[in-house]
Image 1 (cartoon, one colour):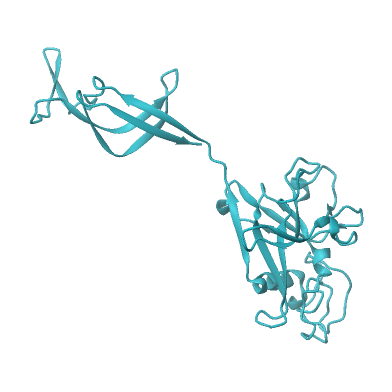
Image 2 (cartoon, one colour; image 1 turned 60 degrees about the vertical axis):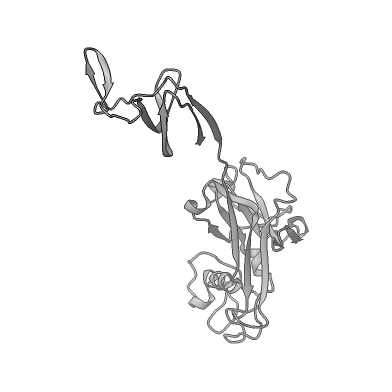
Length: 284
C-alpha cells in the first residue's frame, strides 16, 4: 500500500503532524471495485467499531468517517487524494466530526487514511490500540479478547501482555488474541457500515432529423424488387404509399465511419408525409 499511496522510499504511514505519529502496524479495508465503480464518495461513508460483547449493555463504539468536509488540500506528496479518518458520524444527513485529526495525540495520530480513488481504508493500529473500546469484565486471566486495549495482539493465553500491537502473523498466540480476530469482532459488533459510490458520467445529446423525403425505403433486399431499373416495393399498403419503420440510428464521424449504434425503444413509422426528430443520448 505504501507504493500505491505514498512518495518513493516511504517506509511507514504517517498519521499525524508529529514525526512520532507513524506506524508499521495497520489494518487495510478494501472496497469491492465492482461495487465502488469509479471511487468511493468522500464524506458519505461511516464505519462503526465496537468492543465488548455484541449485545452487551456496556458495549462501546467508535464511529469513523473521513474529514473531506473540512480538508481543503487532500493531495499528498505522491499526488494521491488522501483524507484523514477521524471520529464522527454522517447520521442525520450531515457530517459531524467529533475529533479532528490535528487534535489527536502526536504519539498515536489519527485513526487512519482514506483513499477514495483506490477504494481503501488504512486504519492506524496504534490509535485503535489506545481506544477504550473493550469490556474490562471480560477475561482470559483477567484480560480477554474484549479487554480495554481491544486491538492489542500482545496477549498470551493467561492474559499477560507480550507488548505491542502486531497486525502481521509472525507471532504465534491463541486465535482469540490475534489482532485480526479483534478487528473482525469490532466490525461485526459495531453492526454498521454504510458507503456511497461516486461515478462521473459524461453525456452528450445528438438530435437526428429525418426529413420527409428520406429513409422511406429499406436496404433489405426482400423489401423491394427492381423492374426496368425502377425499384418497387414488394409490400403493398392500403393507401398505396411507401412506408418504413425506423428501428436503429447510427452515429458516424467526418470520415463516414460508424462509431456508435442506438436502438429505439419501439419502431417509428416513416413515410413521405411524416418526419421524425430522434434524440440520441451518448454516455461515456
